[in-house]
Image (cartoon, rainbow, N blue to C red):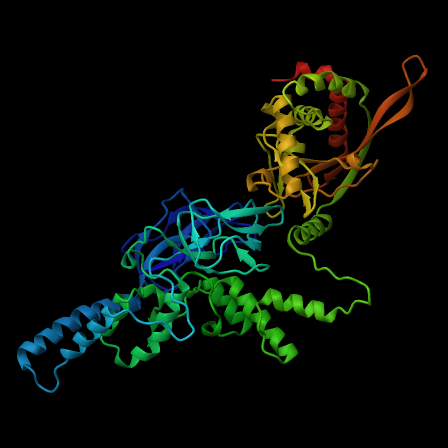
Length: 575
């Protein structure tokens, strides 16, 4: 029996909703036959069968959520069904032949007996090969945040062969937004690390393999490690000439599931989705030559692209590529870029690399427009000075940011268009029910934008505590993924470093971001025409012109300005 893993559905899509099953458990299916209809946030699509066979289990019900690279349904291939049928009938024929013909020269009885005995003997690993315990489990890299599909391995905390405790940090990884630790799901022993330091790991693919302390039976789960699958695959050619029912039983007894090596026309069929097979055909590649990184050696889209890049690089250099595709590209770039003496070349990696890519995409695809104004924050600063003593009584700190956020949340409640998210593919505006205000933090690893959730429902003290926590976590590079996703509008406090004006780039899919300049003491005229010193702060908005216009931005900014210049007016709107 094979598990069909939900394939990639689009960039940044990590889950979908099951709309309708087009087959039921026990139904026969043909290759490329539509099996299930699923819906993402962008489209409704059909998932087709990867092979001819019979559906044995549906893992998700209609209306439930299915995760990319997680089992969607289980099925037996035609070869599995035929093998099972031949095994049963073959056993009957053999028994009948034994009773009828006795121990004649054509008797086949000794052959099954010999094969069964071989099945009960543990098979040694190949010379130089690894042997992972049968009960070993692969740990799949979990979701790391909205739209994050890969990360970079920064440091391993546990070596192969070492014992691990439940929730013990195993590996440190870096995404485009933060550095975080991945912990062990249960106690046991780490037997294999699938990625090395500096390499990229994909979400929902094996990150490491471990042997649980409890050690489940190998027959309960079948073969779950690449090592066992590799041994089974290597053993297949040797046993193929004597493909009898007993031989098939022997391979199953050794723990090799039928899904690990489905046969078609006497050869092993490489598991891959129809979309991957179509891509292989378009590129003129041989699917059997591509090493698969998925379950049971399944070839994924990333494997195809890496194999092509690997092959192209080898053709250009006329040398066999000995590294992964990303390492090959990096090495080639470094080799081709001859820097002058004394110039240090540092490739973009981790958060900085993704920041560069996302900012380039936003600047190129979003029609930005700017709107600037000056705020007189003299009264706001006076209010903060009065409140600072109360916060200090509880060892808390009050900056201007919590006051700015509370006023901003009140303003967007009257102008919800500023608090929406824009889906460019669907050309749709998604209005948000909460105001999650992001704040750009200049960390050592790059720009991070954690956000304070539901500012409209928090007290000033709660907002201040969240701002303090997120700022500290961002500067240490330890922001939780949940703090980085779901933002609806952002603030960049460039004035904290001394700037007066800035033109920030919108943090898509949000539609607006504001840059705050430093507060300056400047001369201004009062109501009687006298020159007085006032505290002036400049603000510069960037808006997405596909959603916002100048009039909407001006009216919204005036409302925010009114709350900040007369902070007592916020009391009439606070809930």
